[in-house]
Image 1 (tube, rainbow, N blue to C red):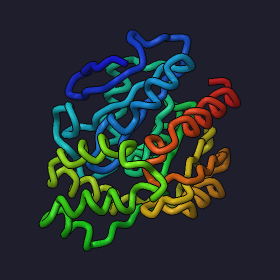
Image 2 (tube, helix red, strand yellow):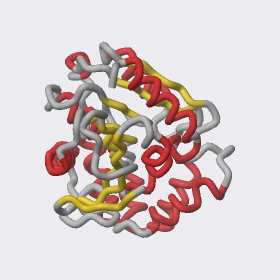
Image 3 (spheres, helix red, strand yellow):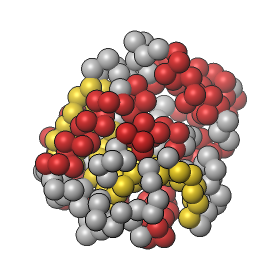
Image 4 (cartoon, rainbow, N blue to C red):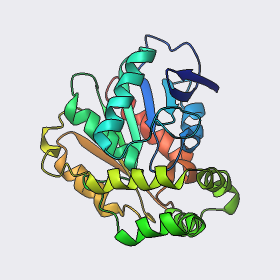
Length: 256
């Protein structure tokens, strides 16, 4: 795995340069997170496809300004994809990253042959109390992420690095990210998403329960869903082999 920078955007990749004969999975993290979320996918799928995971602007090692609208993050991802000349890009996003993925597929359908939406929904309303917790007690917010974001069956060692990384985030950035989630709503547009889409939901996800993924599956014309048992919201970390196998099978089924 390599660490690189394109413009203001820091990213990790399975190998560099990208193979022009392969599609490129572009992994997009959720609110207040970083590319650390995707280490198992970047490494585990590198023999099958070009793998890239970005730190969104203002996150992780990236420069630039964090945003408070999904549309603005989507534009930053497009600029990044153009900057690295990613062949046949397939956006793959979790939670807010899943919202960004939907925005990309809806607004720029010609660019993307397929998409992958993990632990996300077509509308992502946020409880007002969460904003207050982020502002006044960030440690309590991280404890909530630990409690609600992972399956109780997930070992501490599996989630430790992710939680430590999340604790380094700027609370103002996290607050803005959740504002972006709260504003996001493409419920009425899903039917126009015509490319193949993989939906991944998880049995113990309390933040975006499985019904969110089921709704996406039913309302996106060419969607298929993989439902992962004994995993929570952060299923790429909790069950990386299952997620990687689902992604590889999806790529194979669609000639990507």
